[in-house]
Every structure is written in C-alpha cells, then in structure tokens.
Image 1 (tube, helix red, strand yellow):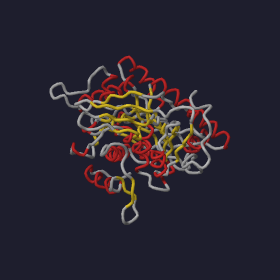
Image 2: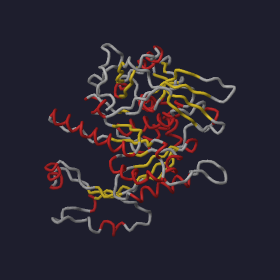
Image 3: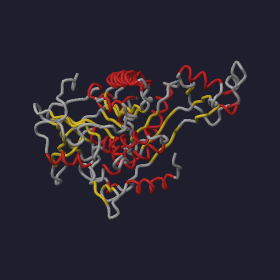
Image 4: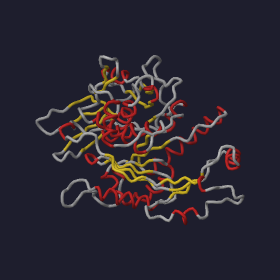
Length: 424
C-alpha cells in the first residue's frame, strides 16, 4: 500500500507530528500543488495550495484558532520540488499536519482550468500519491471525524481499515475509543448509475455522504439542472435525496448536498428510540453489554399516527417502559443558503466544497447539530472562494485571529442570525 514504506518525518519539521493533542478532524484527501488557468485575459497562477486534503483541513482550521488548531490533522508528502513559501504558509496554520519528506519524487501537482460556464477541468501533471489508513499515525487514528474522498468501494475499504486499526489501539490501551464520524465525498468520475448499487452498499458504513448537486444527479442518471433555466434544480436535489434515503430506510446516515449558489441541502431519515433511565434496568443491561439501545430509522411524516407508531414500544416485557421514555427524531429536510449572495464575492470556487466538508466535520465532531455543522461548512466555504488559493491569516488590533481581515466568529454569528436557528 502507498505510504507503508515512507521515510519518517524530519525531526524538527513544523507540525511533523501530532504530539499529545486531541484530534477532532483528519482528512485522507490528498495534498496537491495547483496551477490554475483562467480564461483570458486573466493570467494563470502557479504553486497554489490545493487538493481535497488541503482545503478540507482549511475548513476545519477556520473554526480552530490556536491551541485548538492542533486538533486538525492532515498529511502532506513533500517532494523534492516543494516550495519553501508553501511550507511557511502551512506552518503558520499551526495544525497537526504530518509533513513527510519524499525527496525521491516530485510533489503531487495538478492543472485546473475553467470554461465560460465556470465548469472545472482537472488533470494531474505529476504522479499522484494517495493516502491509506496505514498512513495514519496512532494519534491521527484517534480522530473524532474522518473525511474520505474516494470511490464507493475504496470508501468501504478505508472505513474498515480505520476501524480495525482503531480497535487495535483500544485493545493496546485497555480502553475504547468513541465511534468516529465518517464523512464520504464521492469522486465525480464514479457518480454514475452503474455505481449506484456500490453507493448504497457503502452507506451503512458512513455517517454523511456529501456529493455536490451534479454528482448526486449522476448516480440517478440525471443532470440535476432545471431544463428551462439551466440552473441547479432544487427539486431534483430533493427528489434524488428522497430516493436515496428511501432505498436505505433502516440505515442511519445523512445526505448533505453541496449545491453552489443554492447553498446545501440536508436530508436524514427520522426514527424513534427508547430513552434509558439512569440506574434503571435498561441502563444496567446496557452497561453490561456495552451496547447502545436500539435506534429504529425510517421516514416520519407530519401525518404519521404516533399512537400506532408507538403501540408496540410503550411497554417492555416487564412493563417498565413509559411513554415519556420514547424520543422521536423527525429527521431533517432543510436548505442552508450559501453565505455569499453576491456573485462578485466569488473569485475562485476551487476547493469550496472540500472546505465546506472540513467545517461540517469539525462541527459534528464538537457535538453540533447537523444544521449548525452545515452552517459551519457554509462559512468555511465562504472564506475559501473569496480569492485564488487560501484566505490570508492575520490578527487584528485586539490580537484576534482573522481570515481575509474578518473573524470567523463574527461572520458565523451574522449567518446564524440570518438563518434564525439556535446553537446546539
């Protein structure tokens, strides 16, 4: 496997090891140095931080000022051509980046080009070096959330490998790591009807699947566009999510569709579960078995007959389950708008979706609801698309961290007010 025989990080490299910090987020996306070619007369730019790994790490980092910045983990394989300026920029983020020298090769590089319709073309210009679970250090393996960008079959492999290695860590330490959050970003080339079965076979293993609108439509054999306007069809997004959730009614996962200027759409089946009374017989049995109480998933509708729904659950064989011990999860169906409503604010969309997922993941890892974590993602993406490359990190007169001259908290509070929802 790639990475098994890689040299150890250089001693003294900034961020070459994670240390003893708790890790909230790790990405297995690649690091790429980008060249971006625009339509004339805009000149091309070179040696730009890029890749799904970089931008998703940025998304998590935006919500992680030091010392929380060390909770963001990612891996960079530094080739012989690695620019010193990029190394300094990465060091300034103060993350738990694993920087591995690979002087026998060139750094993974890619070319990006855009059409008049802002459709992106991409190709590798040097051999790529993908990451596996074997590349994760013991500390990175303890992360609360993992971002994976890959095919359905590779996603299943990675999740299985990460879980197996985490299990080995737990056994060695004599404790149990909490269940991690797996966020899967499908690769565009394999979002086709032929891969739909592989996709649904992957869903039971992950917590979030996050295609963009075009990728989701690709699984369904559709374009995802309104035939009359040519714009992103919100109805097509909602319909595809309903079909995908309907195909897996007993599985617990959420769909987060990234839809450009339309924002993102959240969809998750509802369900029901039995509360456990502290010290009661159910909790004693749960502690004994070390397994959570059952959660039954399935779509709930406003006209659902709740009395009939709970008829078989209001009593256990010992008559100890009362009505107040039933929790109802109505599921989620919600659009979260994009932060930027002015198209002129969007300078370069490269990496916006990956950055969104880093913000989403770190929000979920810190106990936020799906809606609020998606708002994290929207804010993170807003910083990524305001310029070519990554936003500028600095500090204001009060010593607060800023990105592009704005504090993340201020932008997030403004966005929350616009969305009118409470913090979880």
